[in-house]
Image (cartoon, rainbow over all chains, first blue to last red; front, side, top):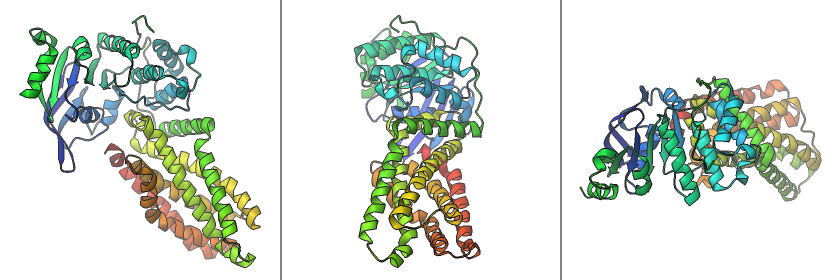
Length: 232
Length: 241
């Protein structure tokens, strides 16, 4: 579903990604872990077609980036710690706007489905700026799955969430993965990553330093694996 | 919501297709107008600023009537340019602050549609402000500004200003010094639009024939086309890095 070969990303003289090779099969849930500054967000932004690679190849769902970016974006849902929602629009107006941008058929039906899914049906006509952070996060997830994407990218989705909201996000992530979607999530939360993901990749100093599936990890735990990968 | 059961998959087939360029532009303009209708944040800031500038000029240039007539075009365009910067900055800051710019860029639309959508919204806001400022100016300075030639120049000048301003605002909003950077970048670049606009406006206010202002109007049209074409070509690169 996702194939990345020898990906390099430079910002001026600074090289953030130094030849990343990465492959994700359909239905896999990959937790991309690593310390601050390892290049996780940069890597995810390239997968999301928000940034161009300096060198290397990126294919998602059979389409190449950046040349076939529009086709990739149509199959991609992205959730970050920012809501990507307009505070001066209501919940349904936000979803309607994105439904238009994705040219979704039966827009009103899908908007109702999504609002019901994220538990905001009763607040559909309220301005998003009046929502709590948790409600905004729910709506942000609804926005990301509005077009029924095959691949979901989560960039530090737990940032700033309280315990209840984090538990809600756990459930959403499990459901998203159970429906056969391919998921890549960056996180600092090793406990949650270990609980949710089927594979763990450690990004360190601009390369994938180590990778392990859940089965392979059974002998040790994620924290030990993570520490060893960073030390190596 | 707490049942831990989420129907994320669409129950019916909600097919998606790349939206047409015009549909995407229309969606962005509609979204901006809707948001502004609710908050009145952008237009009110531009309007208050414009009116303050005009009033300050009114007192500062407490000159004789003849001298006042000669500075009208300059005062008008100075007001529009400064107020426009305020509007452009705010318009793009709204997109940036909650990550909405990424939301736009993630949509499977031609990115130039995002540029045109934002530029048309910005133009609409600027024209609304100008439509309110002109009668106020007419009253304060006792000058009739509702002349077809002058209105045409204001429209063409605003198109050029917003055309290049939207592109530069998209660049500057991604920096920490966005509030001052836009002015520093925009004013030197937009001078080729402002100068013929001021000259043509001055001409129409002095009562010269349309034929005598054709060169300035031609320059305005040419710069409008150049700026919009350049923005159309480079917008994709500007928003990706």
